Amino acid sequence: MTIRLSPYLMMNGNAKEAIQFYVQALDAKVLFNQSFGEMPENPEFPLPEEAKNLVAHAMLRVGETDLMFSDTFPGQPSHSGDQVTICISINDIEKSKRIFEILSQGGEVKMPLQEAFFSPAYGIVTDKFGVTFQVYTEGQQ
Image (tube, rainbow, N blue to C red; front, side, top):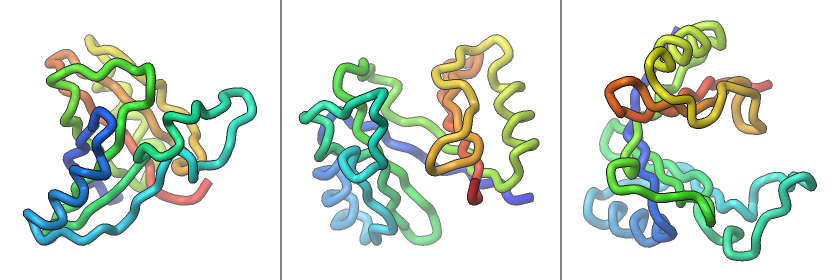
């Protein structure tokens, strides 16, 4: 089993600018960058025009560390303090479920652990200490 913790920066519509800034400031390399408009369409939830060019997910490599980014989705609240979360990347679904369940105890589930087009098990939870974690299970569905 592999487990990694990575900082995840939630930006308020300026993730592209932040990515360019950190590439320059930290000599970072862009490993991945996808807009909401490049994601598979879901007919049940049409994508608003103002979301299409926003960053859905990006990853930079800074030295030996990954730094992840996303813009908040239009209409979703963006609060100071929610801007930095921790992404837990795990390659074992059962371990993801166990970690998510423990982090949920006394906390608040923001998105239930569920299958997504990019992960067999992904969810977001704020633990009882107010720290928000994204649990991301690696691997193909």
